[in-house]
Image: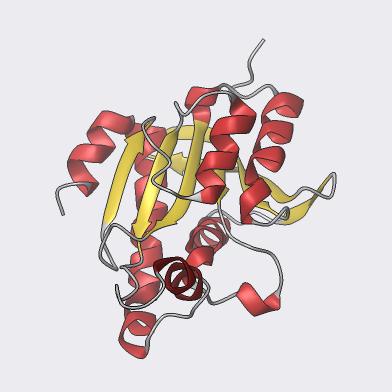
Length: 199
């Protein structure tokens, strides 16, 4: 039988050298949720930092896991599938938070299913879960300049750090991302999309 837990996953790369990079905005947003709900992380089978807690909103309590895969971005799905299987979590109780270059910095779009949009972490999760039908919080990080070698530019961009103006706005943006994940859990995806996608 499926458990009533939710699994909220933030994507990123482990290690100090990636800590402040655009690609790690999923980790940062999950850290924001962990702070909010006093969740402490422990190692899950060497695959992820995993924390367990309860979110309480408007009189409702929801049990959840917060997850930061330790597998590096391209193998994120191994961690997500392992936790899903171990704790018997339904795919419709999974929320994945990740960076998205197709959105301007500060924009958030919520969706379920559809294409991975070239994001290797999402491709890995789709592959390991055998479905793209889970909720996603897409956090806009803007796009690299289009000059020169597009591939190199993209890698340097997502592994680069936010500029000074963006760093100033980051706490508010991360709080919005955390709100969006909570909204999916408490209000359902459709209602959450109505709130966040139109901004």
